[in-house]
Image (cartoon, rainbow, N blue to C red):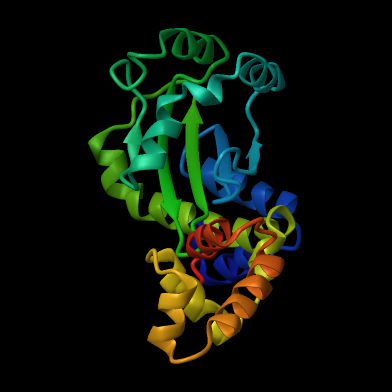
Length: 236
């Protein structure tokens, strides 16, 4: 298939905007026999209300319905993706706790689907979904295409995170000094400023200076929040 030739792989990874990249991903998904492609990305912060980005070519009426009903909160494929990176094939049993969502999705032609989550070292999570109106996903189809489906999920995440993450989370551009990282690491372990000072053989005033600098960079209101943010962002 053309989409898997070396030059096309390079083209996919170097596509300009996220919209252009998603269009290329959708084309590759169609080459695999699916009508629809969806990609969702969840930032690690804020913890209480993480920033998200979503791209799909689902029917517009279904997109509006999904958002209107707040289905993301009860979507079992999303819940699965938060817990596991194992692929998931849509089925009645998967949607057993969300029957209304399942029935409505099917009414819009979304009857067969495969989804796979991905999580990178920076804490960004994503979920790639391939769907179609009919045709069971058979063992033979999986045997033939599974490696390509895995590849698309991973490359899709890499490409989208490269283009979207910095816009959604400017925190990724933060650079902590070696000493700031060190004092936050001990702070995250529950050490007081005095204890950190003893461990690092520096003054408590110096410890607090570095913590204050790190708090400013991370936009944190206290040292605990700073340590949590730094840990979530993979700085520690």
